[in-house]
Amino acid sequence: MGRVQISVIGSGAEHERRAEEVGRLLAAAGATVVTGGLGEVMAAAARGAKSVGGTTIGILPGERRDEANEWCDHVVVTGVGHARNLAVVASGDAVIAVGGRHGTLAEIGFALVLGRRVVVLEPGLDAEGVVRAATPAEAVALALEAAA
Amino acid sequence: MGRVQISVIGSGAEHERRAEEVGRLLAAAGATVVTGGLGEVMAAAARGAKSVGGTTIGILPGERRDEANEWCDHVVVTGVGHARNLAVVASGDAVIAVGGRHGTLAEIGFALVLGRRVVVLEPGLDAEGVVRAATPAEAVALALEAAA
Amino acid sequence: MGRVQISVIGSGAEHERRAEEVGRLLAAAGATVVTGGLGEVMAAAARGAKSVGGTTIGILPGERRDEANEWCDHVVVTGVGHARNLAVVASGDAVIAVGGRHGTLAEIGFALVLGRRVVVLEPGLDAEGVVRAATPAEAVALALEAAA
Amino acid sequence: MGRVQISVIGSGAEHERRAEEVGRLLAAAGATVVTGGLGEVMAAAARGAKSVGGTTIGILPGERRDEANEWCDHVVVTGVGHARNLAVVASGDAVIAVGGRHGTLAEIGFALVLGRRVVVLEPGLDAEGVVRAATPAEAVALALEAAA
Image 1: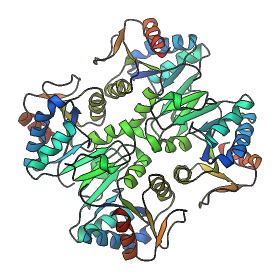
Image 2: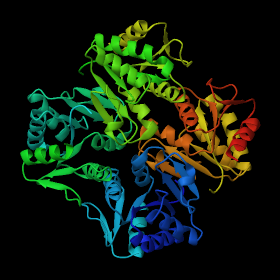
Image 3: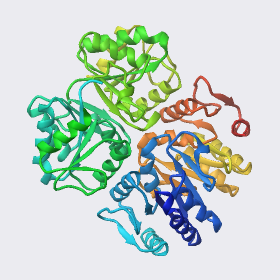
Image 4: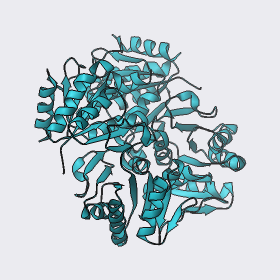
């Protein structure tokens, strides 16, 4: 099946630093980082992965490739708007949520429907069925464990 | 814009009676009842609406019209799997959640992203940004108020 | 399964008169007319159906119900952009194409993938596997025959 | 924007050899090969790309990553069924069609809607607005020209 793919979801500028650390640790462990390809948490996670030479995939809601942030190695342009959230979480062997609001809630719901482990990095959204992590390192470990 | 459309989302056989009452009250108030077109809460809400001569729309995830329950007057076959959840909530002028698990959580997230009021009938899922109702009558009143 | 649903697809202002006639004849025969809910051929088919008291469904690509034309009784807001073309043809027991360009070609392809009969009203698009009709009356008869 | 991405679409076991050659030439020119991730033409194009050390992306219709063929380096799991065809062509800076039937017709339609150049390798599907190529080398040259 090729390399492990972990999806990093979420939003909020105040969460970028933690998202970048999550991306960096995932890439250092050899996992490909999958995100929604746009700004804030998505860009930060991809930037963190690229800072250590990792591989990143951005899955966009719109119809144009150039809407992706510059840290996406591979860009998938879905054209299906918010329904691309389903593709983002379905493409991960596990999912890590960093911050986030309503769109992230939709992604968590879909990930759980599909049986993907969802790790919520504290402080984060509440949802039944997720696993919670206190630090980026713990979140990455829990995600990689589920992906194995 | 034609008649008010209210989406009823959720799942769980134990919630069918309340869903049927929600559907009945919505139809009695002249609203079209939109659901995901399948079983349990979706079927119950549509059945309630039909019991008083209401109008119902079922929005299916699969590719075949005959997967809809028998209480759907109009059937939309989306072919997009769980991404049809986006269509279910987007098609409502407001949304009422009755029971439900992960798929309902995804729908609540999408509804809030799109700015639709989400009324959660107690006991129901927790999510920031929703309005809570103690009874089917209150849920219907709150949904119709937002749709007005 | 409720009433027969026939999807009318296509585009081009020069085809509106024929689309309106198709919508009128479908509604007169008791079929619900399904369209993409926007302008030109979509609006004309729905207008034709309403001119004889028929029932219409509009399936929109965007996220707002008020983008539907005024002849849609029931509006489904998919939020999935051009992927709503799949829903438009999947929701018909058969499909009639009036005029059209690239988007209509995508719809014809999807309809054939799903095993729906596609009737192309002359002059219309070329595609292997479709049935061709010389007049609106013949197109409607061929669509209703497949839907039966 | 990173490396050029070219989508290869189509189907039919009898077209696999030409698809493999297209994949090989695209990869040799430094382009990432995007496909629908499943069998026949999709697998052949990816296999060709990998035979010269290229990079491949597979965009799946289902909900499981392990449905991808073994030549996909990066797998996007869309969960949206045939609507993933939109993502396949939208993710290419240009599109090459090799063989194919109804699903490919839908993809050609979508690619043209989105303004992507579509190169049809002869013998191939007919559609207004596409560019035709007599050989895999010519198809690749025409696709790369449009992507530049």
